[in-house]
Length: 312
Image (cartoon, rainbow, N blue to C red; front, side):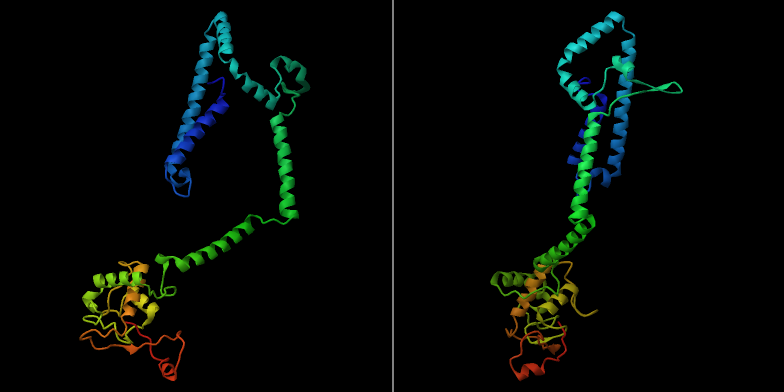
């Protein structure tokens, strides 16, 4: 393995395999595990340190063991390694093409006349991998300048602004139809049979104890007449059920028990009982409520427009 993968390839390869496995198996949500959990970063750092220390130790041990061999044993060992890892020549050829390194025997030919305190310099050419990377950077720079400065493509700041604007539009669209994000401003009256049936079940389970099963009123007010203490209509009724009635003597807030969609259904069911005239209803309380947003068809309706909107 050491012949196929030198230490500068082997150490990063092992490290990133471990890193990838940890990222795969650790559930860290939308953040990398090493960012969300500091202990993961500490483990990776310690693991890399130990990995490098092992490689250094093994390399030192191998050098010492090699020095203890006799010249014949060294020659035999080199021959065995050459035969055992002959198939690794493809990697050596690849590295040679990328680096264009000259054999050490030609060092005398490459030695320059410069001499700085005994330090001499070799006249090596730049390695091809470096030259290729330099050309790629030039090409990338030209494309970048043309794309963003000449053609006027969106930069990162503009892309962020557009994405934020689109996100606001998407959130607004989602809010229009998301049941669990409904409030008194977006709630609408339901009139279909299944929704009203569910609303009746919710009413019987949670509201009948105070308002009676027929909504005629008991401890709580009568919900079948046209008078309301805290305002009528689906929006007012949704608000009252969600946040509770009058302080100290009204009903509790149901927002911790019922979901917005359930409150919408029970409020719609209550409004469907208007004018049902139950037996022995409780005396009417509050004021007559008129929906200001509804179209007025006669003068009598216009006279009630200024009536105080109060909901039960």
